[in-house]
Amino acid sequence: MQNIKRTNFSENIMQAIFFLSAFISVLAVLAICLFLFMRGIPAIAEIGFMDFIFNEKWGPTNTPASYGILSMIVGSIYVTAGAIVIGVPIGLMCAIFLAEFCPDNVYKFVKPAVNLLAGIPSIIYGFFGMEVVVPFVRENMGGNGYSIMSASLILGIMILPTIISISESSIRAVPDNYAEGSYGLGATKEETVFKVVLPAAKSGVLTSIILGIGRAVGETMAVVMVAGNAVMPLDKIELFKPIRTLTTNIVTEMSYASGLHESALISTGVVLFVFIIILNASLSLIKSKAQRN
Amino acid sequence: MDRSMNNLNKRKAKAMMLKAFVWLCGILTVGILIYILLFILLRGIPNINLKFLFGEYNSETLSAFSSIVATVQMIVLSLLISVPIGVFCAIYLAEYAKRGNKAVKAIRLAVDTLAGIPSIVYGLFGMIFFVNILGFRTSVLSGIFTISIMILPVIISSSEEAIKQVPDTYREGSLGLGATRLRTVFHIVLPSAMPGILSGVILAIGRIVGETAALIFTSGTNVLKNPSLNLFASQRTLSVHMYMLASEGLPHSRNMAFATGSILIIAVFIVNYATTKLAGRIGRLSND
Image 1 (cartoon, rainbow over the protein chains, first blue to last red):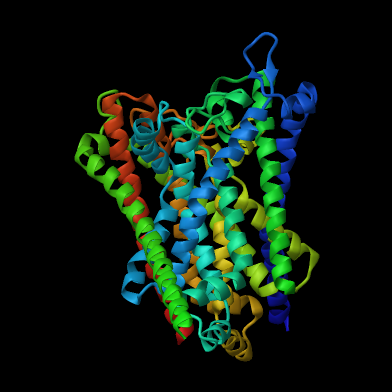
Image 2: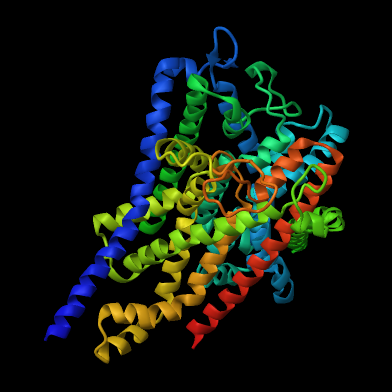
């Protein structure tokens, strides 16, 4: 009897420990929000919300100092859009290849290759970009090579594994009878894949694109090494000219920033964080919609 | 009849083109990977020497020794923090949580959110919280805590996945023999889920090895002459070492950046190989 009581006791204790461990994730998210906002919001208030978000002049060491991050918001949007333009078509086609066309003996090599691509550290991508992509852009497309184009190319490569793996599994999850129905009507394999299977997998593909956007927006080290990091006035932003994004703004200046300058960099992180939260929210929206269907 | 033949030929031509395009993208993806790997390895491996791997750091050797030791230290200690928390969280989610429970919803949302936060934001948080507010300064310790939060979602999701794949008959057998729920979890479910949990741990190791942005402002970019296990010293990890060498822009440091990159790639190779091996074992388990 005593024995049973004791096991009940340890059962309850451990269950509490399991729950507390699980709750640590919630605490971590709350702490990240709290401390980022605690440091970031007052700075935004001091600079003025409109002046922070919608001003293109960033000159923290000027007198009077100005802290506008519009140029970097636009920069982040440009490089992310570029990454999507480059990475999504290639990634999606590669996913279709893996799920529908790839012979088993080729799959054995391609699938691990995609996994390896996902495992390569961003610093390697950045260094590769600096050594290969930047000179390539400089010699073939003009400018000094450190540009939106280089950043987009590198980010496009970096989001490939995300796009490929998630799209592939969603294509594989389409029930076989969809394809069988299409074959029965006389469609070719390619027509079936592109017109029947792919549309049926669209919520998974959309998920992969949003995750890819998240990765591209948040990427720091690879971008800082290829983008040139100059703050450009909005009307001077060009594909083959340098650019500064939200993430690279933080990493290039944090080491010597202090006071309001440092807080403004943290506020840049807050803007980035809010952006990611919005992306996450749209993801769960897609998920719940897909579940309802 | 003629027209429909024509139409069919057109469709076939289009199909061939699509097929070729799909193959091309597959080949392109693999080609990019091979190009990156060879580019770094071919220039890096010739530059790896004993002084670089195990020597004292100075402007001539640019040794990675202390960074390697700091990286290993960071891996071990952050796993010590994250693995128990992550696995317990997975046990709660997979074995104990009731469906539709509000706390469970919040926990899942939190795990998803943590997985999506960019590493630079983790770096900022670590700088504000661990470095400044808790007063750990820019140190390996601050880096470890920051990284521990970052790898939590990786460990949680792979552990939960692995635990869920353990067949219910295992649990029923154990419970039927009179074992308590807790005993069943620790003696039956966890051992069966171990390959999946381990593959999550290895994935996490990969993330720690490759992390840069979250560490620059937490454990810092400082490099010590000789390796030290002092948790309160600011030390760079291998990836940060590579970043510092690459951004110096001198020919010698550039060569050594290639060498560091090669070590990183070899580490990633090992991590990937181990994960695939373990994943294969999970496959076999569920086929039994």
